[in-house]
Length: 354
Picture (cartoon, rainbow, N blue to C red):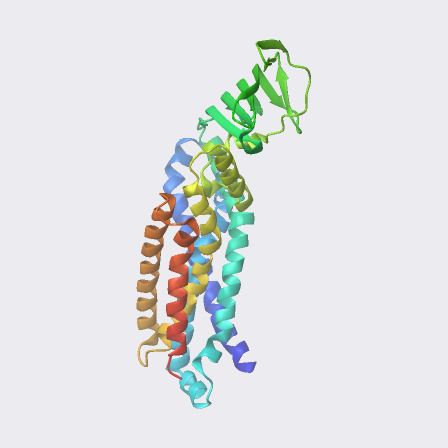
């Protein structure tokens, strides 16, 4: 336990410094990209700081894998340069046991990454985008026209000319109810429908119903039957990276119910769970590389770990592209690179010198 605490103390000091440095560089780079637009539009300095602060969680996410890799390589290099690593091995401590506290820290970093991204970074990025748009007087044109949504397993079909997401109003609404064989049971037409928090309220609506011989039209009485959530009518225009995991799961359900392609959304959903494993992968790679060399541990482990990370990202890019186009299952596209590099890392760790 004394050795574990010593290693974690050395690691944490370097890790905290590198996270702070790289997060600051990412924030600075984002500010440089937008600074000319802020100046031209006369955005107050305080507002610029608030917009930059909303990007801080995402900057930390970018910095975490790099900081873990550098801190692990630097810690091993320092221990070897001072002869402490040799003393650890001479005491009969296996490298896997020596690296265990850092591996557990990497596992915790992966879990932390998932929750930081889902609960903090994504909402903050949405807020940053909105504040930037308002500060720069930019108009947003949502592609919420000609929306078609299926619900209740296809029994109800909504066709909307345009959905106003700000006011939660459907314009030019047609609602078709279908029977078990796909035949039309009724058709509702209304110029507008508003969301009252629980269901849609149709304005000046009429309903056509079919009997055995004819199709009759009457005014639609008040009803609370139609409860499709407003988010369903705008998710098609939303980018998956702007949605939380729960919202992305809802998008997949909407696309599936509407009979629309959803391979790309499913691939992005599985990547939400697989991508945080990058933190654990880069840390285990840095440790396994550091355990295989006797000289220049810091330099060699950094170079080999960075090279392995580049290969990982390239492999993930290929498998995710294949998953988005439906060539391989979404789960496989997201998790295959992770499983492959985890297997390599543990193989190298098990064969590291002691």
